[in-house]
Length: 374
Image (cartoon, rainbow, N blue to C red; front, side, top):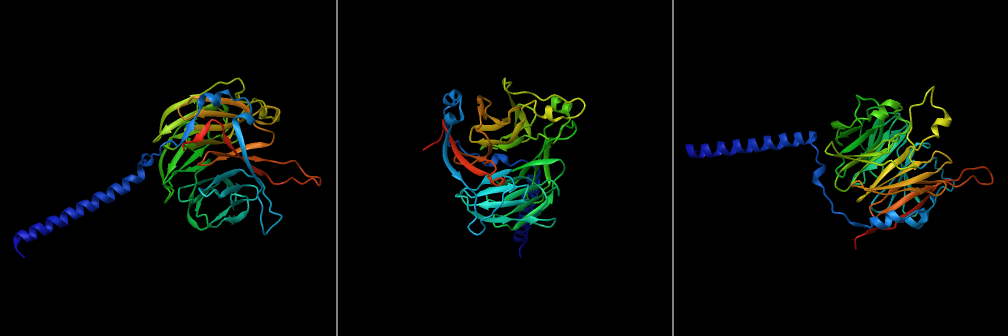
């Protein structure tokens, strides 16, 4: 082979090696970079802010659509301990995390039981405590187990994809579209972060950020009132603690805004003296998880001091306070909002004539003044 051909050959080999090295370096570096800017979705809802501000009653602000009674065609005595965590897939399959029965269950849109995924235990695909569930855009389910301190990723068919440790005090979990996920720590310790952002393949921490406020540090009650967090369609992360009426907005781990209101119906918790009594527990209005985000809206509930019940609070993602102190009907709890803007509440019926407590039912509503673009 002539010298010029050898030279050309070695140059091509050298270029190929360089390109390969650059590819793998960038691939590895991306594990430590945020990729949340890669998926930007345009708003698909119209919001009538003025109209939402005018509502005073639950029956004015929400339009009822349907009641979903969870049932099984093969087991008439299906028992639900508590619908603590809920989400839906795009086909409106309902996923419920039940920490009392220690199971994750799938139901169709009419409430018929499809299957349970995972069982009670310590092995792969088994749980001891379910403190949160989330999903990615492939409908894989992430289950946070607060007792075993681990995260299990499963397909909707129940196959285990991955399992890795969850550092304490992990309290909530939410996944991005690509499967990378955030853990929320309900902590008041000044040296601990509030959020950990992690890679879905190995559970490796990419970045941690956020810190509890001075008020939360003074109270020193880390987990009892945990609050929640959510992601909007532009991948902004919103965080609210259970004892503070402030929403913290993050982008790529940087705090970019704080929404704070001081409505008259919000009662701040002060540090208890001489221990936390039952009387003290009902002297303030903690945030009740979850914090829900749909398009340009943020929605959450406050627990009333007394009598028992909840207020509903509504912000926009740019920080405008639209409404608050909307009384939820008795025994209602806010649980989920799907991609079409349907809000899912649970309702707990009273005990029957035999003293048995019936299963919770799901009630589906839409929000007036919040319409899908047609």
